[in-house]
Every structure is written in structure tokens, then in C-alpha cells.
Amino acid sequence: MSSGVAARRDAKKLVRSPSGLRMVPEHRAFGSPFGLEEPQWVPDKECSRCMQCDAKFDFITRKHHCRRCGKCFCDRCCSQKVPLRRMCFVDPVRQCAECALVSLREAEFYDKQLKVLLSGATFLVTFGNSEKPETMVCRLSNNQRCLILDGNSHCEIEIAHISTVQILTEGFAPGEKDIPTYTSLLGSQPASEGGSARAAGMCLQYTAPGSEGAAQLKLMAGEDANASKRPAAAWLAAMHKATKLLYESRDQ
Image (cartoon, rainbow, N blue to C red; front, side, top):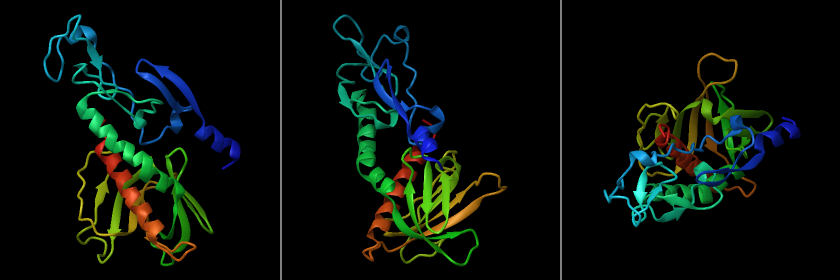
């Protein structure tokens, strides 16, 4: 990919919405799969009482809209200003108590796990039915839309085209217990989670451009320049968090 195309893909612009300033992708098609659209606000005329405590709005009890869910609340029920990274707000924005808790949990993902995914780690990668794995560095692209694998070859997999993610844990073969599986990340099928054993690898099923049916690959934790597998294990744990985040918010 040329540097010009990459620059356009990662370009951002500052926009003002009724809820505040947002730093959004310059081209909508290059938006992050972790992003959420701003909700439609409940119209003022349709809301005469707080949707949490049922307090009646008047000159003293003013109404406020939660920037995450769009519902109407009184100041007591919607007083927190919390970062809302998934909607690209520059500053913390007003949210109801329930939404504020969710946004705070997501802020931890952006501050910790996302940085790990962007940094990448070394893996032994097996494509399809190949018997010989290739040593590659796997990382999340800067715009968070693709997994990029670099070694003797180069491969990019769009997050939106991944249908199944299966985390492999130490001591268990694929199909055995303690292996979290997320099926149809952007669909509606249920996910099954295993225990908290240490992640050793990951299996992906995805749709490759121009191909029929699902392609698959397996990543097993490889050693970095310091002969350590810790960066790969940390990357897998971060990918598990990212996958869970996408799955849980697929209907938002």
C-alpha cells in the first residue's frame, strides 16, 4: 500500500455535534470497527419526566440528554462527564450512570489493550491447511480496521470480515474446554467463554476478498528478539478483550 493511500486511510478531521467536539475519520469508510454512532436524542416534547427517577422536569429540574444512549434524565441521574472514546469525543461528555460505567470500562481497553494490539507481537502463523507455519508480526492497523501480518509475505485481514475468533489456551487442543469462542462477531449468534487459562494462540475464520467460503489461519505465540513469548501472550489477551467488546456491542 502506498504512503498516500495509507495517509488518506488514517486521516481525521474535527467536527462539532450537538454533544461536543469529535475527532472522526475524514472518510467514513475508514472508521474504526470499535466506533459507535451518536444516538438519536429522545425529543424534548416526548419527555416530561426523568427516564431514571421519574422526577418531573420544570424550571428548577432541568432535563439533560445522555450522550451515549440519547435518553432524557435530570441532573442528578445524568451528572457524570466521562470519556466516550468509541464515539470519538475529544472531551468527556455527560452520561447517565449506567452508560458512564460502560464507558469507563471501555476507556481501560483504549488506554491499555488497544496500545498492545497496535504495537503487535511475533507469532507462528499457519494459513489454511498448510503444514508449515511462517514467523510473522501481527498487529492492528492504525485505523483499527485490519489485522496486518508481516513476514516473508504480507497479509491484511479486515476485522469486519472475521466471522469466528477462537482463543487457544495452554494445555488444551482446539475443541476442548477453556477455549473462548466468538462466532459471527457482527452477527447475533451466542458466544461461549471458557476459563482464564493462559492464551497460547488464536484461530480465525474470515472471508478473503474474491474467494468463496471461509478462509482460516492459526496464530501460535512466538518468541520475540529477547526469546520471550510474553508480548505474544499479552497481544492475545488484548485481542480477546477486543473481540469481546465487538461482540457485546454488535447490536448497539
